[in-house]
Every structure is written in structure tokens, then in C-alpha cells.
Length: 388
View 1: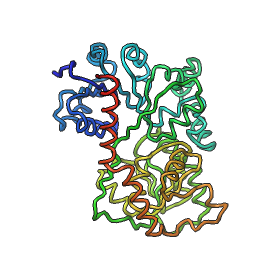
View 2 (view 1 turned 120 degrees about the vertical axis):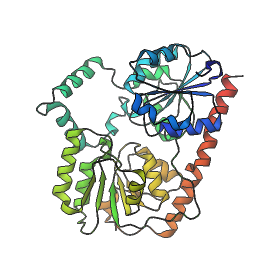
View 3 (view 1 turned 90 degrees about the horizontal axis):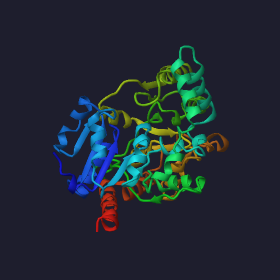
């Protein structure tokens, strides 16, 4: 059993892909000073056995064990929420009474702010989502959820911001956007990022594929409909159009996107419907030369960074804070909005000098050593201001 008196940080998280990265970073920065309370059962618990760390606790939200851990944490602890999910928002007010709260914001939570919700997806995708989740025959649960959320009027994030002391978004531009649109919010910004798996090996080769990648998942912010309609106008004839649909989203949306993609692109359409091993997925990405990340909000940042590092020509929506961020740090990314208006040669290969420059910039900001140093600074800040 762990010794709570030595605990400085309590991490509260869902069982998501980012959490192993957080564990590795914090254990390198300050070993055995964190407790990781992760929602999950026996299946999820087995995923963390390799760490051989008794401070990793996997337990379902609803369990007595989970609540006991929440109630028995010592007072002098920094609580770090990795994403403010619905369940996390339920326990946030309780913990905020006795603890300093850090919110590692992902995007799915941050963009639930009332003044930012319009950036979640474009109009055609939004209309489809409303149609499929509310009015579709047999979607009684969707109707109930819609009515419940409307009556509660608390399904967003705004009313919970008063409980948060620090925010660590994926990019600072998201902090700026949130605070500009919520003038009464008094959040302090602190940098932290999960590993982007950028190790800058000297023998890393660039991708020189000809295929197209659309988004990173079946999540709505990928705006598949609008992206499909754009690509249809480009008269593509000899490239696979790879569309990951094996993560996120909901069933009826996936079904619609599958049908639309097959109708528009026929045998060029290459959807990923089932999970595949990471190495197999990375090998598939080597066939990609062009990626369309058409989100109007910060989304799929890890995937975008990985693609840019490997020399893929990336098109993004200008409304996204991620687009602004990458342009500001000197990355060569291209605007989806300007494709038709400027008659760009969309599939002109990315020049080698831009590939090299992109890799240099991405490595400078996002390689694993840089992000570990960032985590160390994160820890040092709280040790200096809260533990001395």
C-alpha cells in the first residue's frame, strides 16, 4: 500500500491513451510522488501492470474503493484532472475545497464552454449529428439525453471553472481563447504536454507516400462530410483515401460516413473500421503524403505533430487554434480554406526544405526530452510554491 504522506500529486484520469505517457513523464520527473487514480476494471488494470507501481490505482468511478481514495487523500496534495469528463466534474467541487486543482485540458472538455461550442464542428456535420442523435427512429435514449442536458443547463464546462486554479491546455492558444471568452475566469496557465513520441533519431526517414489521410478518428470535429465534399471536387483518381473510423464517434455517424465515402470515392475509399496494432498503423501512415485535418478547434494535435515530423503535407482549417499555433512557431502547414479559392496544386509534393524545417521545429518544441523538461518545470513550480 502506498504512503499518502509522501504523495504530492494526485492524478485523476480515465483509461485513455495519454495516461501511460503522463505516468512515465511524472515518474521520471519526480519518482514515487504521484498517485494515479484511473477509472476502470480488471481489464484496464492489466494494462498498467508493466509499471510495477503500487501508486497506480485502477477502480471504477462508482466503486466504494474509488470514493475512499478520494476522501482519504491528505490535504497538502495538488490534484491534477486529466480531462474534465462528466464524472470528473462531479467530484471536482469536493476536492476543490481542500486542494489546489490543475486541469489538463484536452479539447473535448475545453470546447464545451458555451461560447466555444460553435467551434466543435462545421454546419453540415452539426446538422447530421443533431439528426442522428435526436430524431432518428429508435433513438429514444438520444432524445432523453438531449432533454436532460437542456433542463440541467450544466452539461458544459463554464460553471466548473471557478473550482480550477491552473489550466494546462494542449497549446497556450486554447487558454487564450477560453479566457478571452470568459472574462470572469481566473485561471493561471501552466505548460504541460503528453509525449508526442518524437525521439529525433538520425536515421528517421520521411514519408514519401501518395495516399491521403482524413482526420484521426470517427469524432465529429474531423468534419468528414465537409472534407469529403472538398476532395470530391479535386477529381482524385489514383490515391487511397484513408479514413480512421476505429476510434471515437458513435455508431450511426460512422455508418453515415462509411456510406458517404463509398458513394463518393468507390474503390479509393479505405476506411479503418477495426483496431489494428500500432506498428501496422504506423506502416500504413508511411503510404500517406497528404493529410486533411479539417477541425475548427484544436484537435488531433498529437497525430498532426507526428505527420508533420515525418514530412507529410498537412492541410488544416484556419479557424483552429492549432493552425495558428503551428504557423506561429514556424511550421509549414497549409490552409484547407484556400484550396479552391487559390487553385493550389494540392498534391504537389512537399519540398524537401520544408520537410526538414518542419522536422526541426517540431523536434525543438515537442521531442520527448523537451517535454520531460517541461514536466520537471511543472513539478518544480508546485514544489517551490506549495511544498516549501
